[in-house]
Image (cartoon, rainbow, N blue to C red; front, side, top):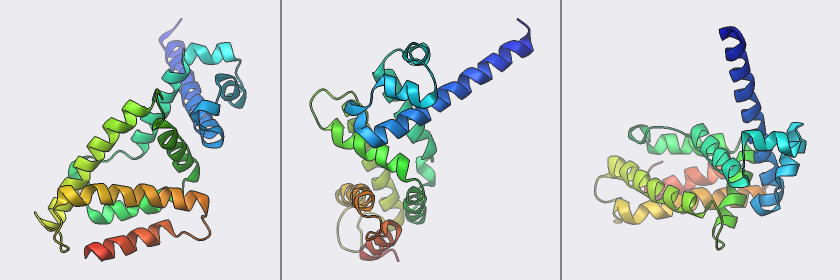
Length: 191
């Protein structure tokens, strides 16, 4: 096999993996993780179940790839986060309901015993609260205008962001997720 053939095969393999992850995102958004089967993902991407297992040998391995892909889409170094960038992230999320629906389904299911994403979300929320604490401290110092410390306000900020996503998914016509988040920033004294 020539170098060009090997490179072409690797590119095709990476493209196939990406297509599988996109299909898994769609299936999980529709059915939740427990309701999503490897067969459904394989069918969605045009593979046999055995062909899918070549790329992802277990459902848990596919779940990890889905979660990692979602994190890559939202990746931004912590030192760059600012309050105005958080508002932009909320606006960006409003343009990708499928990703948000997948995240919400996995998050909701992860609180049940033995769910394979529980550890991921537990660790993620520790990191997100720490990051939001840093954002708030950079913006307000050791006390927000309302008197809360950044450590006390960070879980509230995260709760507002995630809670708005659920409300928006349930009733997008009635919930202006970006507008509501800007209103929340106004309560903090930001806007």
